[in-house]
Image 1: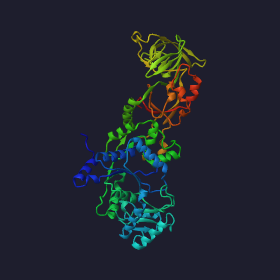
Image 2: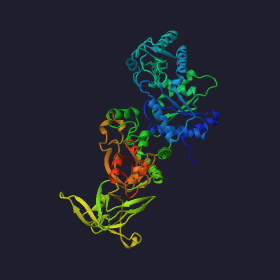
Image 3: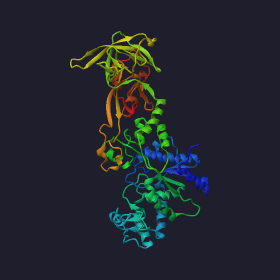
Image 4: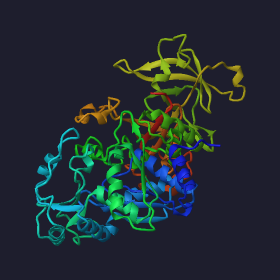
Length: 555
C-alpha cells in the first residue's frame, strides 16, 4: 500500500469530519501569460491524481484577470501541453466568465463597509503600507461613506476615470504584521482590450480578489498552491468569509513545495526575458524546462509523469537535479527508441579486399557495406596503446552487424592529416570466435550515408541557482547548445517526429521541427535499394536536424 502524502491525510480527515465526498472538487488555475513548465506539471499531477482517487471533478480554469499579458496563443499552448501529458479535465472555465459576479460581490463588500475607492497613486499606496515591522499609514480616502464609494466604483466601471487615478481596496487592517492584509487592491483600471471579453470591462479584478472568489463560485473544496502563497492564505480566507452564504462549502487553501530545478529557471517572467534578449529561441527552446521545450527536445510524457510521481508532495523546499528526470527518461527511451548508426566525427576506412557493396541485415532492414566506410575518429589511434582496444595498426575490431577488420596502413594528405585507413576485411562472418576482437565499433557506408545536423545540449546556466540573481542572464552557459554535422544510415531519410532514435554509442535523439523532411518523396525512399542515387539522397536530407534528448554518458 502506498504511503499517503500530507494532503491526502488532510482530505481524509475532512471527509471523516463531515465533508460529503461528492462535494470534493479540484482545479488547476494557470494564468494565460506564458507556457507551462515542469513546476506546473507538479500542480497538475497533484490535483488530477486527487480527482481520480476521490472520483470527483478536475477543472481547468484560466485565471485571465490581466489583459496586458494574456493571449489566446497561451490558452492553446496550455491545453495542448496538458493533453500531451495525458491529463483530462471535466470542465474548462475562465476567471473572466465570473467578471459580473465578482463585480457584484465587490459592491457587497462596499455596502458592508469592507471596501473603499482610493484616489491615490499606486506609488503612494505602496509607501503607506510600509513594512511588516512598521505601522501602516491609512489612506485619506479610507473613511469615505459606502454610498460615495459605491458611486465612485460605478464611475470606475463606466470609464469616468483614467488608468491609475483610483483603485478599489479592501478595508482590513493597516497595522497587520502581514502586509497582504494592509488594505489590498481589489480592482484597478486597465485601458486594454481583453482577449476574451473585448472592451466590455474597463476595470479588472486583481489576482488576489478573483482567485479565491472563483474557487468559492466553482465550489472548489481544496485550493492547492505552492508555498510562496502561504502568506496570502489569511487574505484568501478573509475574502471568502466576507462573501460566504449558507449552504456553500468554503474552499480551504493548502500549500506544498514548488519544484526547483538546478541550473535552470522556473519563472515565466524570466523565461520571457530570455526570449526578448534572444538568448533562447522561444518558449519551446529545447534548453528550457517548459513542457513545449521538453517535448521538442524529445522528452516523453511518461518520463515526466514518473519523475513528478517519484519526487512526491511535501512542504519541504528542495532543489532537484535533472539527472533524476534523465533516469526515468532513459528507462522509457530504451523501450521505444529505434537504433540507428550515426558517425559524428568521421574517419574514412577503405576496405582493400572489397570491390562491390555488400548488403547486410541490421535490425529489420538492409544495410549497405561499401568499400569506404566512416567510423568515429576517436575510435582510431595511430600509436598503439595497450589500454586502447579499438582500432589501431595491426589490431582487429568488429564492425557492428558486419565484419571483423584489421588496420594495415595509414594514408595521409600533404598537410599530414589522415586521408583514410587501409583495412583488411575478414570474410568469415560465421566463425567469429576464430578471430579475437576486443571492441565493436559502429559505422556507416560513406557512399550511402546521409548528412544530418545535430544539436547537442548542455545546462542552460553555469550556476546552480540562477533564479536567485537579478542579473541571471550573466550566467548563461555559452556552450548550452553545440551544433555539429554527422553522417547517418540512410534509413533516417524517413525519420518522423513521433519516433525516438538511439544513435548507437552516442545517445537518444529526435527530429527537430526545423527539419525539411516534408520535401522528401517518401514513395521513392521507403524501399532503399542498391541503385540509390547518392547525390539525390544528400540533397534531400541536408536539412535534417536532430535534437539530442539525452547522452548515454553521465555528464
